[in-house]
Length: 151
Image 1 (spheres, rainbow, N blue to C red):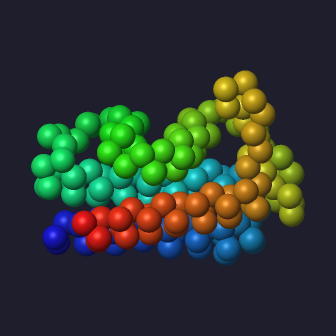
Image 2 (cartoon, rainbow, N blue to C red):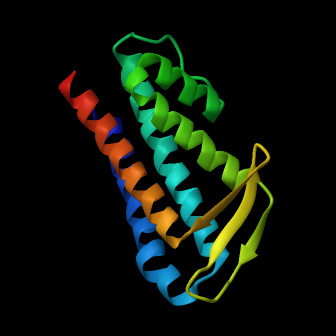
């Protein structure tokens, strides 16, 4: 049980850092680098939570082993818990944003945004969208935590 508590704390720490990045760092610096760093933190919170859930499934003998590749781990979690499918798709979108080439829009101004293309569709991540990404990540972490505590 000790490893699970450490993983939950790790995810919550990443969320605290992301929260600080959005509500403090981004407020004062207004740079795309802060947006990109926050997305990385949200991905990290997802990764930690996915590993935690898979460790639990492995411990309860519902899966035999955990894949080393993060997207495969996410797919395995989605197949084990179909209710999380939309959130895993969101996780993959954030990973795509993180890996994509991007441009900076209105950096150092109120409407700072990271602009990129995902699957040939333009995508803009501004402060409001980043806050929605943060909220969705918090809900994912809490949902998985609640689901596994009940089992």
